[in-house]
Amino acid sequence: MTVEVGQRAPDFALKDQHGVPVRLSDLRGRRVVLVFYPLSFSPVCHGELAAIRDGFAGSLPADVQVLAVSVDSMFTQRAWADQENFTFPLLSDFWPHGEVARAYGVLDEDRGLALRGTFVIDAEGVVRWKVVNPIGSARDLDEYRKALAAV
Image 1: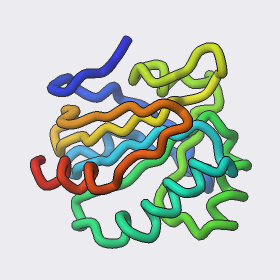
Image 2: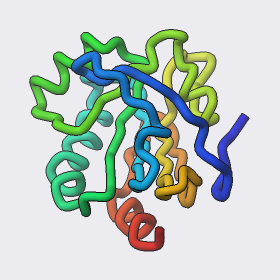
Image 3: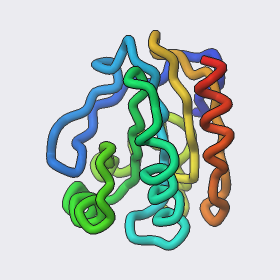
Image 4: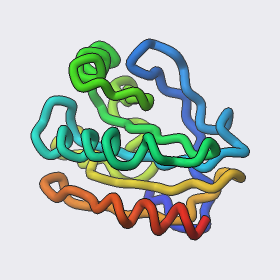
């Protein structure tokens, strides 16, 4: 199954790097940039999340929440977030393994990890923009900005 623009974003509840549950439906009224990434501590993921930290997340309006999701355990994400000073939630889709990535159509079933999928979700919970890149191809943050400006 693949989530398309105009569809309601599948709800989920995942724990962040601190063990705090985050439910997408609890963020209604805010726009969400949902970023799936393959693995913590990997080079391309490091570059992308560092760019989100340094050039994107800090300059967003108060009604926008960045959520980053991988199949890593909460403990791996905590170590990575602490090392890299990531202050936005890193959500663990560890068990059932890749369930949320699968629901959004971005789980690479053969490798057991998420593709580089990004979904901009409006305040009502509807997907308004998406992009899915291959595992080795970084995304363009300017595209995120354009998508948010249009929502």
